[in-house]
Length: 60
Image 1 (cartoon, rainbow, N blue to C red):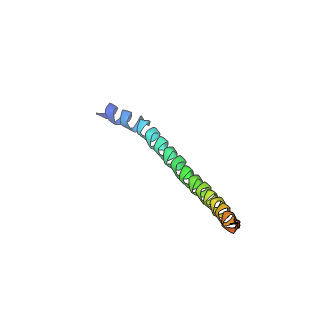
Image 2: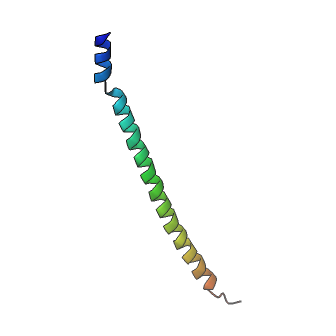
Image 3: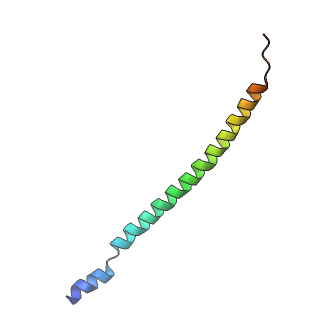
């Protein structure tokens, strides 16, 4: 029984899985924040283009 407890205490495989999970979550958050920033920037550019196109007078 003591040998089993000793192996359980020294086993770090669960800690490694948790660390990989935390790294994956951090990467996911970074991707979401980056995509949001890029999306806002692209939306702003499309708005500028739309405004410029609306300002063009087309001769009839």
